[in-house]
Length: 177
Image (cartoon, rainbow, N blue to C red; front, side):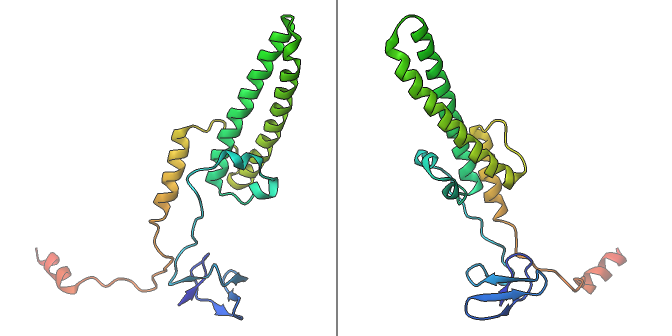
């Protein structure tokens, strides 16, 4: 039996590509329709590559929330490192060596790049979670991942419409004791 992945209701087939859910008042793509009241699948990877930092904003928006959190942790570290490098090169230049001026400028450009990437990823996370975590530690990511895995144990969306009848013999036995 085909069911809505959002509410678990039986759905009607419109054509080979779409179904309709009366309760949700919406068309559903056949690719997300479920069977027997199953819930929506949660798509995620438990890692993110450093190369994701260089993706465009529309590409970053397609990543799962876990990937975004992991990516934000990496970007914040890179940004912090670039700020540190920029500071070190500035101090070296102030000490009288002009050899570090170009390195300071390069570090400054990288710092601006990572700052903008931080803003992009933070804003995407903010629209999904409603807030941006101040600090993303390994334990935070492990707990987030564990919550995703534990949620998979959530059962199907079934509403019981009849009361369970107690075993009458057991009920009579308990009253006689």
